[in-house]
Length: 332
Image (cartoon, rainbow, N blue to C red; front, top):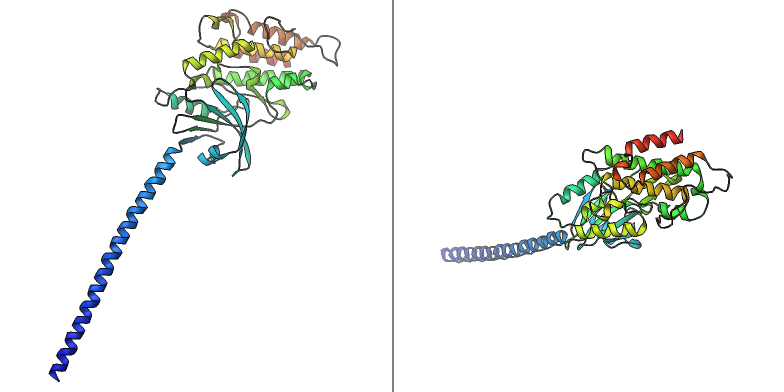
C-alpha cells in the first residue's frame, strides 16, 4: 500500500513538473514572439513616421484649416498658367469636393528654407485678409525643396481677359469704377494697414482676379519675397515686356511703393482704353462707349489720375491714400 502511494506521488510530481516545463516553455516562446512583434511594430512605426516626414510639411491658414498633404498632392488638376519661376494649377480637392489654385514654385527659383526669415515671410503673407486681396490658405514644402501655395479659385478669370473679351460689360462706368477702387483699396491695405507694409512687386491686370459682380481680388502680392534675386530679375524683365516696368527699374531692381503706383496707373489706362499696355503705342486716355457719343467726364478724371500715377519721376506719383480719396471724389 505504501509502495502504491509512493508511485502515485512520483507520478503526480512528474506530471506537475512536466506541466511546469510546458508552461515555462510556452511563456518563454510567447515572450520571444511578443518581443519580436514589438520590434516589428516599432520598425513599421518608424517607417511610417519617416514616410510622413518625406511627404513634407503643410502650413495652414484661415480658410485652409481642413487641408491635408494628401489633398494637396493627390488633387487632379490642369495647368492654367506658367511663368519662368513656376506653374499654376486648377486643382480639384476630391475629399472636400472643392476647387483651389495651386501655385508651384520651382526649387531653383525660390529662396531656400534655411534662408533667414523665409518662413516669417510665409506666415506674414498667410495672415493677410482683405475683401480685395487673394488669401493664402496653405503653404506646402516638399522634401526636395518644392513649394506649393494654395489659393481660392476665381471662376471669372483675370482682369486682362475681362477687358479684352469684348462683351461690353467692361465698358460700363460702374464696372470700371468698382474695379478701380477695389484694386486701390487692396493696395492701400498692403501699403498702409499692416504692421509690416508690403510692396506688391508685380502688379498687373493678369494678377487681378474677378469674383462675383466683377469684384476685384489682387493676387501675387509679396511673391517676390519668396524668390531668389536672379528669378526676381526675370520677373522684372517679364513686366517690362508686358508694359509694366517703370523707368527707375532700368537702373535698379529695387521695387518700391512708387513702383506699385506706376503699375496701378497702367492698369487704370487699360480699363479706360480697353487696350494692352504698350508705351510704343500709347493707349487713348478714354474709350468710346457704344451708349455715349460724348466723353464721360468721370472717365476723363480717371484718365488724368492714371497719367499722374505713371509719372516718369517716382516722387511725382501720388501715394495710395491720395489715390483712394481721389477715386471716392470721382465716384461721388
